[in-house]
Image 1 (cartoon, helix red, strand yellow):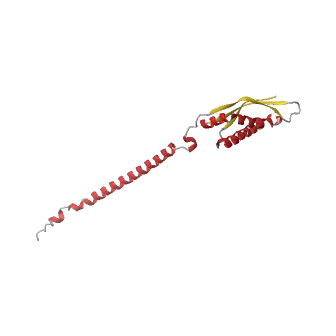
Image 2 (spheres, rainbow, N blue to C red):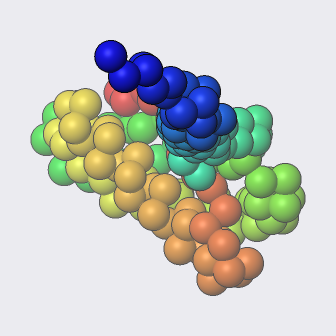
Image 3 (spheres, helix red, strand yellow):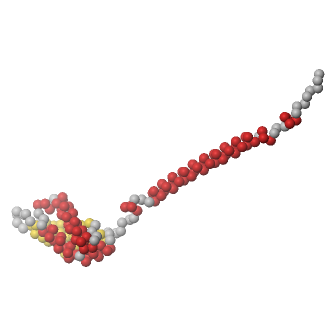
Length: 173
């Protein structure tokens, strides 16, 4: 029998390269998983940050608390004769207050109060008693009065001045 050949020692020894592909594949997988996790975290934090920014920056109307309302009473109350009354003379007594949020407008309203009173007095004296009995009639008069105030204030100051006109007393007889 021929003597058994011994295998070549180079073939029996594992080469160092034989274990490295698994190591390289493992490292690549680890880096890929880390990159994917980091990317997901980045996008999630970016979306959360933009959502917080959107919540922190509300619409311009709600971003600021409005300035406190300031009222100016046009004293004394207006007293006028009403037109169109079949049952005799009818009178209207109305107390008016103007509301603004601008301190400069309040000063301008005070300065121009005599002109405002004159315009409103003429408007109130043109009213029909039958129309003012209803709520709609009173609201229409209120809107007309505010328009008169704004028109005069725009002419005098370049600003509307009053934000609202309020009837604080409204008596007809």
